[in-house]
View 1: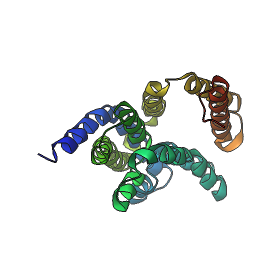
View 2 (view 1 turned 60 degrees about the horizontal axis):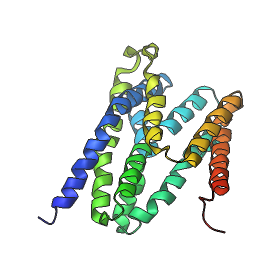
View 3 (view 1 turned 90 degrees about the horizontal axis):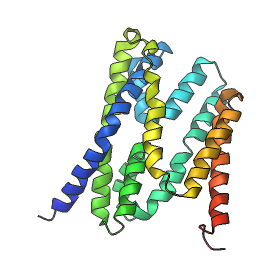
View 4 (view 1 turned 135 degrees about the vertical axis):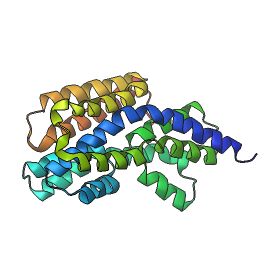
Length: 237
């Protein structure tokens, strides 16, 4: 009986995470295909997904490696794209920071875009959810996402050239982010940040090594913070 709430939270997390399979599978398949085309073995492609477990950073690093970009640029670009994980971590710490160290380590590893987006929305809707249920929900969202990310990467790497990139599988990347970002645009600051980030990214699209993404991200954060300040929604100073 005592475990029933946690099991219910886990099941609800699985249900919320399941729709992401529609984009996770083709996204990871595409990465597996491109990784083998770039010269990586199946084991190396899988290791890439297991260690990095961040699609946008993986695709960026892979593209830069194919472009023969300097190693330092590859590393810095991947790190810059994954800087959002630091913001995710800071944002979710008030909800999961009380967990034992080993559970925090698990949550930190599986803290990806989808688990963060679903978990934060759930925690905000249910601010009094017990800590064990929060962790159960988080793991529930992760269950249909991360394991299938690995499996689809292996499938894509094994199938290799038999899957043509001409099928347009890269549609999965923007759709995945739109599915996550849409429900989170709830305040004028969110809308301003998203709008400015998109415009700045497009204007800076010509910069080398995908630096336009970093410009867009920084511009969006500044716009969001400034909007909050002007509307009096930020922390008191």
